[in-house]
Length: 108
Image (tube, one colour):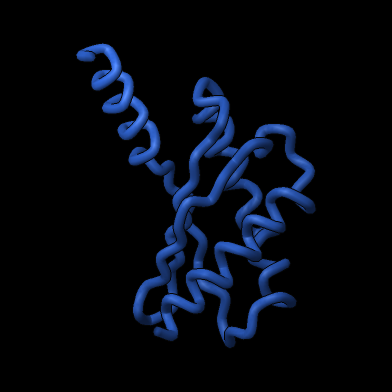
């Protein structure tokens, strides 16, 4: 239960920080689909989707560069002794679902 609450809080706060406070044009239109914190709270895997898939590499690089800023903002916002290391991961499941949906439509 505790991990679920931490995951939800981190997802909400990181989404807000990326949308409102990070001033990098390459991080526009990023959606956080899930956050998974390890049991020891040392690492947070942040799954993201990107509206403009053509800029995926640029966006993932920009997210990696913004990691330190996002972590520093989380210190003030979440009640954790130690903020986990943030790892941004592209969420393939949304793109995969869209491909399957398109194949189904074509088959009909």
